[in-house]
Length: 375
Ligand SMILES: C[S@@+](CC[C@H](N)C(=O)[O-])C[C@H]1O[C@@H](n2cnc3c(N)ncnc32)[C@H](O)[C@@H]1O
View 1 (cartoon, rainbow, N blue to C red):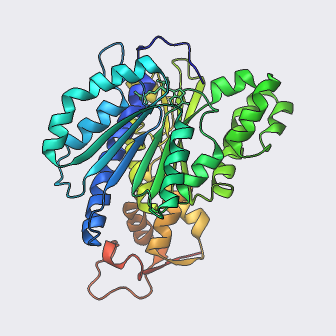
View 2: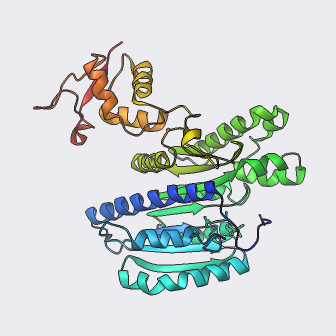
View 3: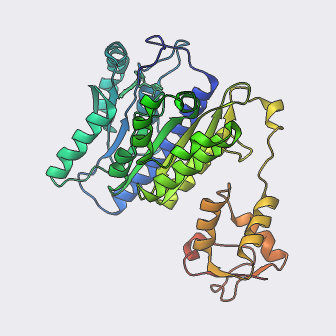
């Protein structure tokens, strides 16, 4: 969807919060994928990062746009990255594409010398068309696209179809981090000419009941319906979202993260917690220390309460408890809560590994060690 912004525009606080999440996650993802590929001895392996709505590469205030941020993240990575990464940047606007080309030039030589970046490709065109063609070509050649991270930072809500997300996520080791603009969607709901594109976004007509809802009920309905569509229609195992608001706290858009890897979910939640340390998965342009106190912090005590309420009477491995924490609660850390629950005699470890100290849940035993939550 064409936007009404100048070729280079000023970034808002939420833009840079989004960049912080992207940068933190990209660094974690490359480190994990490199060590996995080396451990599995996959020769010739490469990672792929796609920025499907790349923009001009910089903002009015001189800040880096996402493609430059991604290149710099890899070049400055503190790990010894043994598996090179390919970059594909897609931008539809001719002028922004040209500016991005110039913005990338100063990094090309350094990228080649570093051995960390195997190629930087820049395409002018429509993201969905370019990616579908790429997926078609790979399918014909019976080649896999992953390990790959797709950042699909559209400005609106209708340029990333459910079908594209399904296609990407049906490939092994692929993840999608993308943007869905509630504010625009809400504004255009009355316009019947926009309905077909909404159905592409949702992969069907399940969004339609929103039309008969009160204004206040609409965002929750759309969020839940869209999350369900991602899980059911695109067959995604784990979906997490982050809320972006303007300076008045009004909902602007959601960032969605889609992965089939629990480790991926853990790292993304960590990256999101860094931007919103309350565990609310929400950022407002007004965010400042005094405003943070308006949101309730998700504390260890709340996690203890959630674990005990949901799991009382059940026996399960530590790995299953960890999955519960990552998928059903805002937390990603869980060992302190388990330690406290054990001290309070609300959980026991029926067959602990030899030499285990009470209150400890070593990573090497997460799949074997069972926990009994008392009723
Ligand atoms: C939100 S901006 C991206 C900002 C950039 N990702 C960043 O964080 O610095 C969206 C960009 O996508 C471009 N765009 C819009 N529709 C597109 C499409 N269908 N395919 C590719 N790019 C598109 C716009 O020209 C705009 O530059």
